Image 1 (cartoon, rainbow, N blue to C red):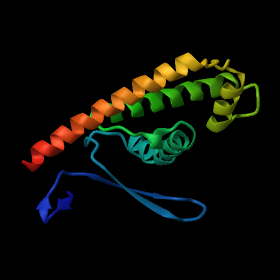
Image 2 (cartoon, helix red, strand yellow):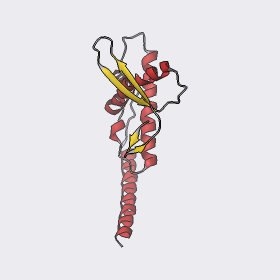
Image 3 (tube, helix red, strand yellow):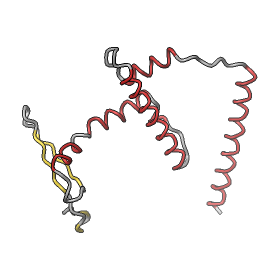
Image 4 (cartoon, rainbow, N blue to C red):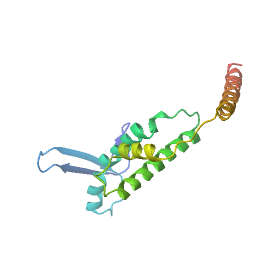
Length: 152
């Protein structure tokens, strides 16, 4: 049973895993149900490295850490797109298995190099810039109005 703030918490598993070569001991807590097979607990406790590698790839190559959102919904939208992007790249990585095993950044670079690039014309760019400036100004007014209401 875990203890938090000197109060009893939920029952948890303590999983100990020792490396047979280095004898390094790793500890994990799990809130899995009591009927969970031991093999499942061991397998799930070893999933930390692949998950951390996935997040590292997403942050370095796919912009997961570059979000500039103001709402919870916007954050979820950004994270969902990054995860879908990563899933797509992993599928491409598996599909290109005849080539040497490519890393996610290498697949990203490959797709960036071979996919056609959109050509931009000046009127289109000016239209997009005008739209974004108008949206930024409206957001500024909205936030300013909220701050003024909080001060009164």
